[in-house]
Image: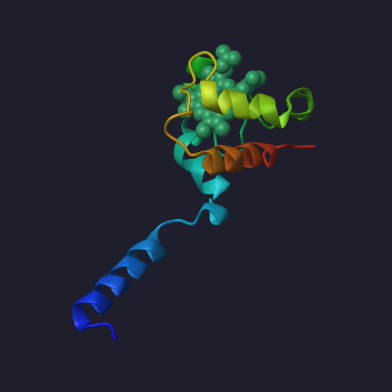
Length: 109
Ligand code: HEC
């Protein structure tokens, strides 16, 4: 039979883990807004002050989308070409992959 302190410990642990984001539901859109919008803009067109300043890529262009594979995009997120910061060490693999998908969703016809 569990005594009271042990039970409380288990409950505390459950609450703690319950509040951590699960790998499966990493929110790519939210990550994009958090890390990328300041340069690439909400719609990916990079029509922001920093986007202009750093010559950030327009990620919504269909032609650009066609010319870049998921691996290219993942590589850019990890390495950070040119003036863009790399996210290899700051974001988990699941987060990086969710961002690849978020970038794909920026595509305009
Ligand atoms: C400080 C501004 C800045 C931030 C923040 C930033 N980028 Fe960039 N990004 C750039 C610039 C500038 C380039 C173009 C680099 C070059 O080719 O010289 C670029 C290029 C890219 C490319 C590759 C374009 C290509 O043709 O290879 C992708 C994909 C990309 N960014 C996605 C993202 C994503 C996703 C995020 C958020 C995790 C992000 N960027 C955050 C500035 C930024």
